[in-house]
Length: 81
Image (cartoon, rainbow, N blue to C red; front, side, top):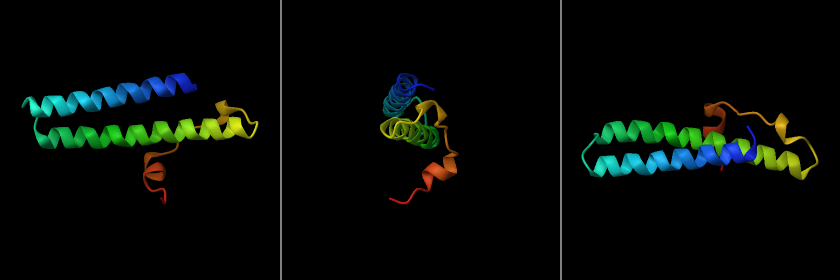
């Protein structure tokens, strides 16, 4: 994925997150349904941001950003802060 494709995916995921929260308030889904889907969205967002950071880091050091690859969710989710 190119940077613009990753950013579009991030926007789409954020839009879906906002829609889920609105649907919860409107009573269109349960809090458990919303929570489960939000957890999945957050995982996907973390992976997208990680891939974008990898691409930018490669570019900054003169490497080809196209060699960056998505990391597994469990790896991205367990980074030390």
